[in-house]
Image 1 (cartoon, rainbow, N blue to C red):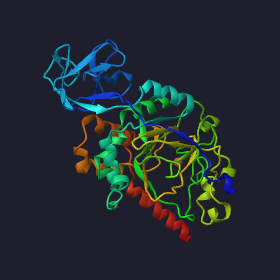
Image 2: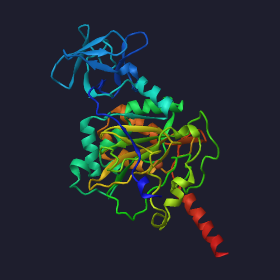
Image 3: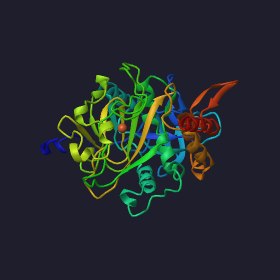
Image 4: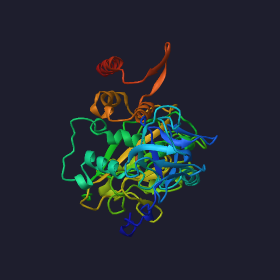
Length: 403
Ligand SMILES: [Fe+2]
């Protein structure tokens, strides 16, 4: 590594969004939209069918169908909605009792536009897709940005500390995109969604080298890397939520954008993770590749970056005094074994006050994502760590050692 190559990554600047679509959220958390026949209905997912544009008059025009929704209380964010003078019920129809809807922050672009870009490029940035309130709540649990003066609570998993993490996990546009991109509805988180907080680099610490994410794990010192290219079968999408703004100087993730298409791991000379994790490696070899062939996505806080898990990348180097928080999730199809046990944190989440704050749709999504299942005698079984069996294995290993 020569000094002139340090911090020379190309910056892909994601501009701040000046327009967002609106989501109209029913009491159960489903989204008001228009079905294929042109009737209003509610949906548990967020594609173009549930995107509304707020007009200057404060009404909502559908982005595909010729339908306009009117708020009964123009200034309220939780209110009844009418269609041609009839008040909508909780299913987006006009049959039963009227219901109140939440007028909520939506994406900058249509989900179909994001999907096109994602398929063409192997990555996409959903600019400021999280609502300002949700970003603030994430900063608070991470103790960064506006809450940098607070101390992070390490007594329990952050997943059970704030509903913001589960709510972000259930973010509907990114989930719809991931399912479309992987061509499968049954997707899981391969580990409990976790905060990655990066503080100022001290010039000595171990930094992460180049790699592809789970389950490919190319360049990673782990057992069980995917042995061959997987072609059109996508075995993982990584979802990086920018809690803090992602900037080059502040430690944004570095990528080789488009490298997923090569369907192989990063070159050793770029400094791979399996070399860089070793004590003393940085001292003798310097930092991993930071030259102009690498890319930094510079994005506002509250953005979500999705990328094909084959994409070569590494953690950024924070050269500021501001801690940078991200919420990271490896999403895999249900036929890929999870990376870590999620059952323990899911059960703690179920028992926590956080669970009570979520709506039905969010609860269902988090369950679908976090509870890995297989077929047992008589039906589906949730998979978790088997402590008894583990103890047996450990005892056997002990016996082997004593031979
Ligand atoms: Fe990674």
